[in-house]
Amino acid sequence: LADRLQSTVKKMTGKGKVSEQDVKEMTREVRLALLEADVNFKVVKDFVKRIKERAVGAEVMDSLTPGQQVIKIVKEELTDLMGGEQSKIAVSERPPTVIMMVGLQGAGKTTTSGKLANHLRKKHNRKPLLVAADVYRPAAIDQLQTVGKQLDIPVFSKGTEANPVDIANEAILHAKEEHLDYVIIDTAGRLHVDEHLMDELGQIKNNLTPDEIFLVVDAMTGQDAVNVAESFDDQLDLSGVVLTKLDGDTRGGAALSIKAVTQKPIKFAGMGEKLDELEAFHPERMASRILGMGDVLSLIEKAQDNVDETKAKELEQKMRSATFTFDDFLEQMEQVKSMGPMEDLLGMIPGANKMKGLKNVQFDDKQIVHVEAIVKSMTKAERQDPSLMNASRKKRIAKGSGRPVSEVNRLLKQFEEMKKMMKQMSGTQGGKKGKRKKG
Ligand code: GDP
Ligand code: MG
Picture 1 (cartoon, protein in one colour):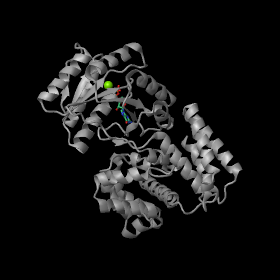
Picture 2: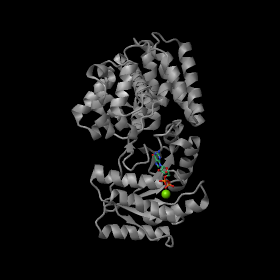
Picture 3: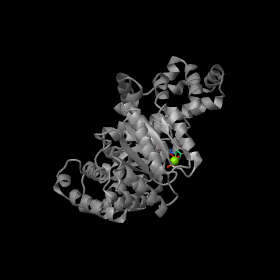
Picture 4: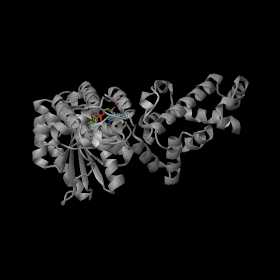
C-alpha cells in the first residue's frame, strides 16, 4: 500500500495545477493501492467516491497548491476511515472494571493483556489483576505468569483444570478483596474462528458482563483480520480493537477496514514485543504513515517519554534541519539509547522506509557501544565534516576504537545515509517545496 500511494503522493505533491484527468488518475491509483492492501472492496469504493467528490470540488481547484490539497483530502479521509482517537477505557462504577481479551491464537492476547495492565497502572494509576483463563495450554498460563512477574502485577490462575467462567468469577472476587480495580481476562484462542471458542467466550461474557471486550488482532494478517473482527463482533459485540504487530511490515489494510466494517474503534496499537510497547491508536498518524510522511509525532512523543522536553525539541530540530554532525550523533546516542531499538525509531522517520540503503543500516543496539567508541576516536573537525577522514585516518580511528576498519567505513556510510534521509524528511515535513528528488 505504502509504495503505491507514496508514488502517487509524490506525483501530486509537485503539481501546481490539478486537472480532472489528474484527479481521475489519482483516485484510480488510490483505489488500486487500497485493494492491493486487502482493504475491503466496499470500503474502497466509498472511500474513492468521497475523494473524487472532494478533489474535483472548489476546495482543490481554487487552492494555490492543489496537489497538496488533494493529499490533504486523502489523508483526512484515511483518518476518518480509521475513526477518531479513542484510547479511553471504561471505568466501572462498581470496581473492579472487567476487561475481556479475545482473539485468535498468536494474535497477541497474552502480551497485550500485560501491556494493558502496565498501561492502566502507569498512565491511570490503577491496580490491575491479570487472569489466566486460557486453560487449554499450560504454557499459556506460564506465559501470563511470566508477564505478571516482569511487570510486578498479580496474576490469578487456577491451573488447567478449572473452567474459564469459574476462574473469571473467582478472580473478580479476589480483586474485590484485594482492592484491585481492573480485572483483565486473558482468554483462550484458536487458530481459526470456531463454534466451540465462540461458545466459551459467549459464556464468559454472559456470566461476567465485562465492561470492555477487546479483540486483539494481528495487523499483519490483512484482510483476514477484517474477517476475524467481523466474526468476533457478530458473536460478542466487541467494545474495541487492539491491533498488534504494527511495528512489523504491515500492509495497513487491516487498520483501514476493521473500523469501517465493524464500526468498532481501534483503541490501541501494539508496537513491539516488549510490555511497554503499546500506544493509543492515532488514526491521523496512521494515515500519515500510510502516505509516507512518517510518524514524526510518535517519534517526538517517544522522545518526550524518555528524555526531557528541551532535549527532545533539540532532537526534533536537528532532525528536521538535517544539520546533524557526528557530535550530535554522539550526544544523542545516550538519549536515543533510552528510547528503544534504533530500528523502531527509524521506522518512524518519514521516508526511512523508502530508503533502500537503509535496509543495510543495521543499528543493532549492542553495536551502539562500538559506534560510540568509533565516534569518540574521531577528531573534533572530523566529527563536523566526515569527508576529512582519509584512509590513514580511518585506520587510526579503527585502532583507537579497537574496531576493524570495515566497521569504521560502514559507520561513515550509515551516517551519510542517515543525513540523506533527514534531508529528505525535512523536505517532506516542511511541505512548502513541491519539488523533490526521486528516490
Ligand atoms: P496470544 O496467543 O494471542 O496470547 O499471543 P501472544 O501474546 O502469546 O503473542 C504471540 C506472539 O506475538 C509473541 O511472540 C509476542 O511476543 C508477539 N507479539 C505480540 N504483540 C506484538 C506486537 O505488538 N509486536 C510484535 N512485534 N510482536 C508482538
Ligand atoms: Mg495467550
